[in-house]
Amino acid sequence: MRILGIDPGIATIGFGLVEMDRGQGTMVHYGVITTPAGLPLSRRLYQISQDMDSLLAQLKPDVMAVEELFFNNNITTGIAVAHGRGVILLAAEAAGIPLYEYTPSQVKLALTGYGKAEKRQMMEMTRMLLKLKALPRPDDAADALAIALCHGRSMSSRLPQNQNVKQTI
View (cartoon, rainbow, N blue to C red):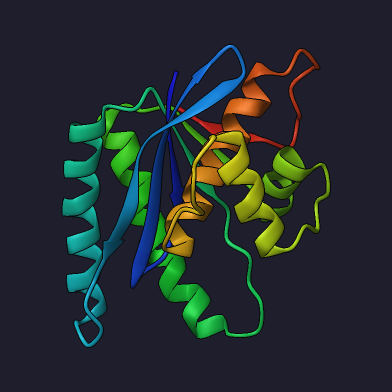
C-alpha cells in the first residue's frame, strides 16, 4: 500500500510517501511544498491546490493520511493553516484518494508507544522504522513520513481499529 502522509501548513507543507508491505514501511519519496511569504492568502491556497494536484498525480498514493490541527497559542496562524489543510483535503477528495486523519498524539503513540513523545524521539523512530541513514529533513517532511507510518502501522494492526480515527471517502 502506498501511503502519502501530509503535515499541513500554509507556508510549508510536508509530504512523505511510504510503501507498506506486511507491516514494514519503506520510504519512497519525501519533501515539502512551499508558498512564498507576502503572497495574499488566496494566492497561497491556489498554489497549494496546484502543487497538491501535481503531487498526487505524480506519486499515485493508494491512501492519504493527514495530521489534524493542534492549536497552541496563536489562533491567527492556526486559522491560516486550517485554510491550507482544507485545500489539501479537497485535493484528496477530488483525486478520489481515501483520506485518514490522525491527531498528533495518535501519531506519537503509533510510532513510539507514548502519546506525548518529544520531537527528537519521533524523528529518530521515523528514521529507524524506515531504515534511513540520516534523519529526514526538513522537519515538516519528517512529520509527514511519521504520519504515513502511523497510518500504515494502524492499518496493519491485528487489533480492532481505533474508533477515534476519522476516515473520509
